[in-house]
Length: 191
Image (cartoon, rainbow, N blue to C red; front, side, top):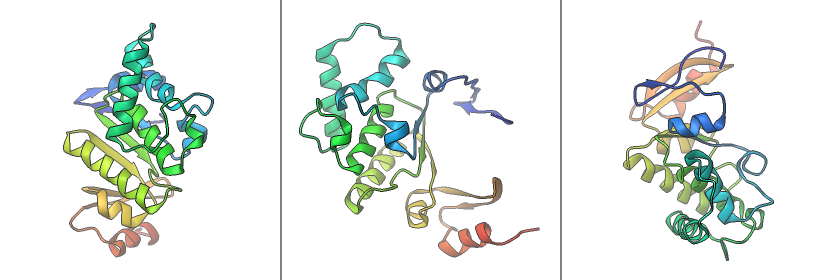
């Protein structure tokens, strides 16, 4: 970070690595799922289990528990895969994105950061991913989403911060936000 602080549950967090962030209760679902979110050389089961194992420091693998947890996540997030032993790149884009979300949800984060969470997925998967986000919020998880998809932002956000050229342009509550008010902040020079 160049400036500022990050706090989770009122405590400042110092992050030098993704492991530090996960242990502090943060998780990221990145925009580039294939380059940054998945281990394409591993199967779905291992993609789902590795972040949790790293966070908890588990060094011995309990195959039965790993399979049970992976199958539970596949069911909970409606990931369409013939088997948890298949590689994630054999799945559709929407199901790959759900695998990325599921693997970080396994770490039981307090805050889930989502960068363009529905980029490159079909309409059905988009709806399912929105439902996953809503369920996490209903369970008390904070979800911070960066999205250029205005209908998505308007559908999901309780509060919208509009950025332009790296600067905060304004803040809108969900009930006062519409496409026009967001675009006004994003496109007009407010000097």
